[in-house]
Length: 34
Image (cartoon, rainbow, N blue to C red; front, side, top):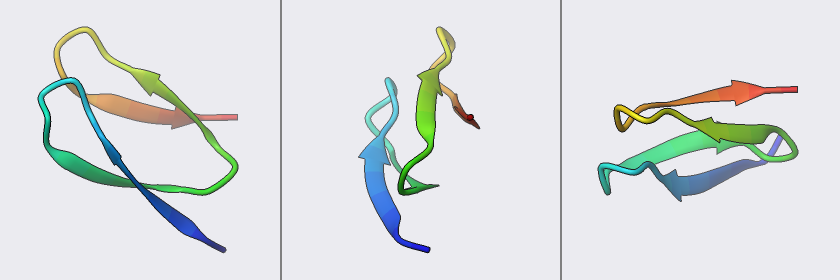
């Protein structure tokens, strides 16, 4: 599985599995979804 580096709305780096959609949370967090 590949992992891609993304930045959330707070500007902090996060890692998420490649191929999954990122849903950005209004409070600056994030969660991975199908």
